[in-house]
Length: 334
Image (cartoon, rainbow, N blue to C red; front, side, top):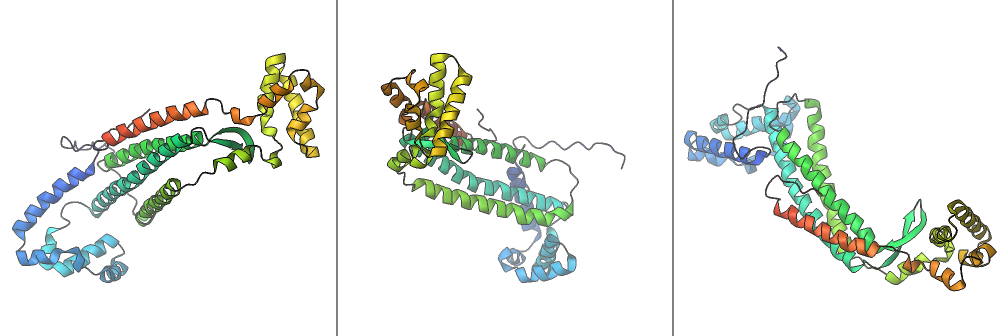
């Protein structure tokens, strides 16, 4: 009411950022106190397996709060022993702690699948580091690359995502200890959405791992699609334009010339190589052997194979460091 800032209490050494040790320490202390206060016969009644979900649901219709309805049902079932529970912390403290621990456990399940997927992608990208595939942009052929290079991008995104999720999880663990004003109108949304998000993510990762592990790659078909008749081999225009610029020093002229020839190829349905070969301006710059080499897209993947090998090494090293540091709160960064 006075507007004064309430400083959070410092946590015991070794408990910063992670609620699990704190919660377990508190639970062990509470259990010892309960054992001293409650008879053996009463303790047998404390099993959650003895509670009725239907009874909790009926009670919730009266009290309007699902944890309060749980506690009332628990108290009715356990009798005097239930009086030793829910002393001190508010209901929201229990909900926040439980949800955060749930997130941490769910995160571990998702993490294992994500690590497995990264491993599968690394193995696949190494196998296909030289497998030719056509790149795509704006729903059309772009320039060729290798399938291994494409997979290395996917694997890199997985590893970067792991670091981002871990940073977010560490923030969530720390936020549990910070004083905050809660809005009870969001509780039901959180408890419905967060489990569903994790379940869907886990299922997506499971399916993706299975698909990538069993993926059948038809390298011959991928190579054929690079020179698919429907695209008239126009993907070689970039390489040809650069070659013209190197010989003439005129980039704008080269771009305009190749654009006009591509339009002519498109409008007439004539393969681009045939149109280019019949242009006198092209023939004055290149021999037939030079032109054939320039339009052979199988040799136009640049350093894709080398970059794939380098990416695999970097990704595997990062995964190794990630696995090594999983026991703590350290996060692997570039």
